[in-house]
Image (cartoon, rainbow, N blue to C red; front, side):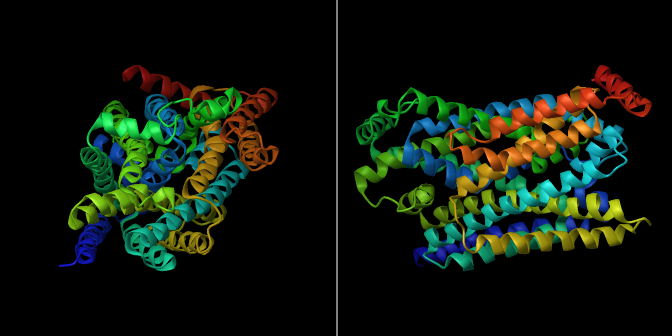
Length: 495
């Protein structure tokens, strides 16, 4: 058989497995809460791997190694920031959010939690949060579709549009019918595939180059600053500081990512958060280390043997095709699709919940049936996918660039509000609304100043200050909120 046949066999097996898992999840999903939150019954290992896989989209195997390959180890500060942020997210947010969303009228989405937690009767807070989710997730989902198209171009020499459509169609199939449970279970398989690929490819490449010493020597020869976490001397202290601070700032984004923190809400209990944290942080450490290593090792491999990729973001794809048996290479390529599709499916589910749970149900006077809500949820998935696909037809940025902007949007708009809602009882609905809108606007406005600093950091600080300031000016004691806080204190003492 030709190499191409082996690749198609591997991808065919992967697609079939995803669709089978989606079908099994479909059979276990009967109501709206089950479709959106899996009935709050995720075991810690499923929640951990699902959160990790939905977090690390195509940028993990394409965007991050590509940045390292093009610029050197200084781009690794992104990985450091993400690892710290992920740990703190599991530590600070996961257990309290799991408990607080249930205490606050069994909230099953982030916008509904904000409204219930702060007893916002105006519906403005919930509506604004939903609009922010739809705007940034449509862009985020578009980045996944772009990654799918680039993948098929690089791996098979095929058409960008064809690859984008195939990835979108298969992801839609298991997400439409399997809902949150289908997305979570497929994420587990995809997470395991991703981490395996990011271990295999660098190890095999180092062996072929001639060992660690030879690899490091070549990388350093190609560029004197490639192995320095502060880059080369030509960067200058100011530019280096901006890159380091911007990289670390990625970690702030975790507190506001709806597709990640919704996994916390779906845990079986608050006690499961500690186990999930250990599993999730370990998975992420190995995955990020593999991604950074693959980018660096790619520098040495292609300098020694030639055939460097035209697009740096395809370095892992090209290494796997060059070094591995076609069937194994096909499975590695499938792991790239896993990274893309795991995040895309989670984004579509959260967008659907925003449309149905936070907009439709908010304006509908008579409660709709569970069957109607599930049908509308699936329609919402389809609608957002169609809009994102239209945007992805003619991409105008790199995969990492698209992800960075959407990540900043959620991190700045929601991150401060999530933390304040969990840890500060004086937060008000008007403070949360003002902070959320300020953070979202800040992400759009800050790049206009061309400072080189990642927009997430200044927008996050702005949102935090505005939320606190407006809350202090509008705070009025609310007995219902105080009762919820009392329950949360009691829950904390039981843990």
